[in-house]
Image 1 (cartoon, rainbow, N blue to C red):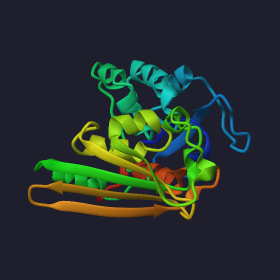
Image 2: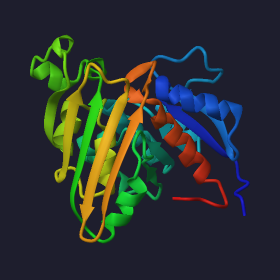
Image 3: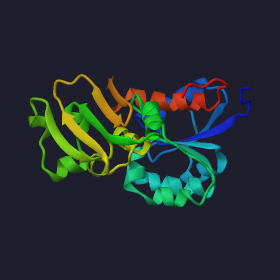
Image 4: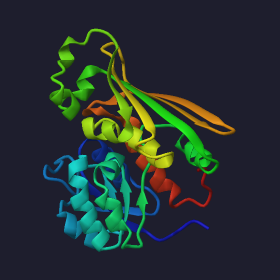
Length: 263
């Protein structure tokens, strides 16, 4: 039976991704009503009221997070206090701020992490039940997609001088999250679904000839292996992200309310 209960939704962060989700909710998704949003820079093109994190957590059944990772712990504190469910797109925040999961142990609500700009996460979680031997992800974006990343600044890398496909970083998912917090939610998501951040190997490439953002994963288990490649057109409003990321949130919302679900 279809769930006929309508849930009130709040969106934390209405940049490119949050606004795309908001517009879809405003058009209508069965079982949901967009109640409010929260952002230091309200999107004047959205016909919605803006409130604080606290007020949003108090008045909404479900919170959707599309924030820069450093802001996520503050949101989580407010949401967990009200014991509300949250869809968290910034998987990097889970790696960077372990206190998020520590706080979450004291509540009964759920954190739901969508697949974002990846494919194959369902297979990875299935493979994890039998044991994963190794997991690898290679992400390639145009150089401008890495602008202002801490790793780029710390290593004094001039992205404008990159004329051919160049390896910027190779290491584990935790180090990748620290160096590229706005770019590797995909790697963080893979690590959470699989064998953890310290064992998930990440390569980050800058390619001036790349048309979009490309993510390639390879995960090997005892009896099966998974290889997936996704090529995404960057979101015009935020080249660090792919348009598929917002759609993964919309897909998750619909799955939560449908009588027949393919996971």
